[in-house]
Length: 426
Ligand code: URA
Image 1: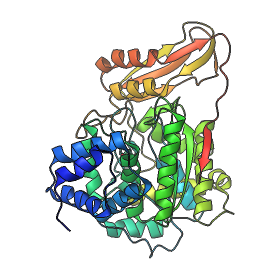
Image 2: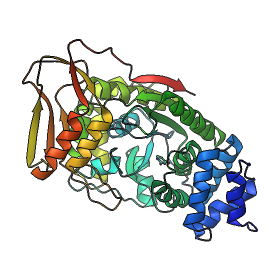
Image 3: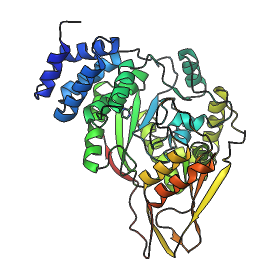
Image 4: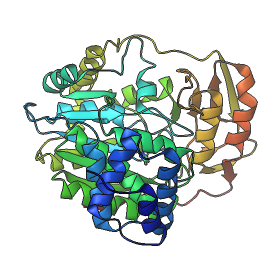
């Protein structure tokens, strides 16, 4: 592969042209090898953000990112495989109950996850609050656990789409994360390289999501479904509401505890609804349309898989979870109904409490987070607890409280109910 000058590739896109297959293959490979410099890739990413890409360019870019690393071969796994990806939200712990639930219904779930950055939490950070649990698995152990337990949630290896790892870090500091072609190719290159046969995308819409508007969320979802389908992955997307946090907890250990409630047959209605809806989509896409996930939650089979999955990675599913040293309860100042509980505000509060990180090398607190005592639509009396702020360090609480207070409102009449699942794109 060879023969291009990075500056010509940049100029082509800057001027609104279409990149050739050869240009795309070259620039992605040369960037991964360090031959194209960060400043050149930054300029190209900005040109892509401003000019966009054709569907053919996005498909080729995704293929080049997949080819920058290894593709996992799941053909030895004796069950159909199905995975889920969420574009990230506040209180989005769905992967935790969903993965063992879908495995309990007969599919294998190869869930390669990441850590959180900013106000949205990461699945691995949440699971690391379980004493002993380890995120790192080599390929051999990953495949063995997938075959034996049917469920794995672990860190993606360095050889999975390495071009994306490098490019994502660059986009993060150059204001180019928001380009739909780059988001779609970033997510789908990792999921296709992971080798799953079926994929359900949970594309979040609202204040706590990447995509604040329905139009951009829809465009992202359509682009990703097309990419998956073109690579023979049965792909479906749901657009779901992220204007308010999911469930009653935002943080790490608190979200694990809530997930265990769901696996015990309880838990908040919205978390149960989204878990079951995504499970049905995954099982359908995996060719298991007669499976009954509701029953698997009720009869304890999903919980059995959860325990095996946690134990297989060194965790103790019965061990007590870390508890925060400092707690502050914020109460309603008047009677009425909770009208607004803004996902972004609560996400920032949890982050300020220590549940999230500002830079990717920062540690997170297992015990910090927000526990919601009331959800939108709930009636309240003056003095009732609205939410609880938890931290390891009392000094973190005032700034977190200021963020949360700005996002919570009480009105005299109940707000209109909004649907959780907004649209399905297949
Ligand atoms: N998540 C990803 O993996 N990549 C993006 O570009 C955005 C969100």
